[in-house]
Amino acid sequence: MQSQIAPVIQFAKRLAKYRRGILASAIYPMNSSILEGVNNRIKVIKRMAYGFRDASYFFLKIKDAFPGKA
Image (cartoon, rainbow, N blue to C red; front, side, top):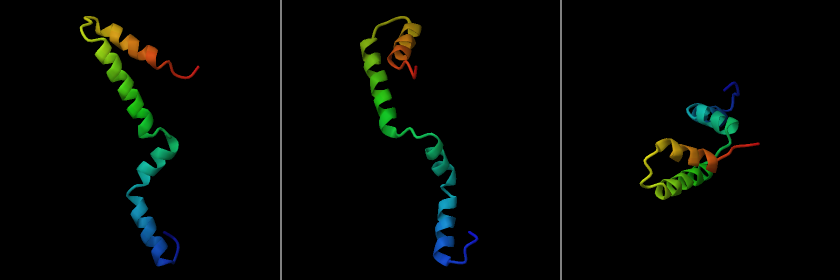
């Protein structure tokens, strides 16, 4: 914005609206492909767990499928 070049100022103004999203994608590098894979695996577990009466067991199966980083 401090530049005296008009195209650079115009570009900076356009980016200002998206600043929050740009910073979030730099800080949290998770993309939608990983999220889609997680959602798909949860749906598969849900289909396999059809008829179970215990919801806590279902959530334990989901936690077991995604152990996290060691």
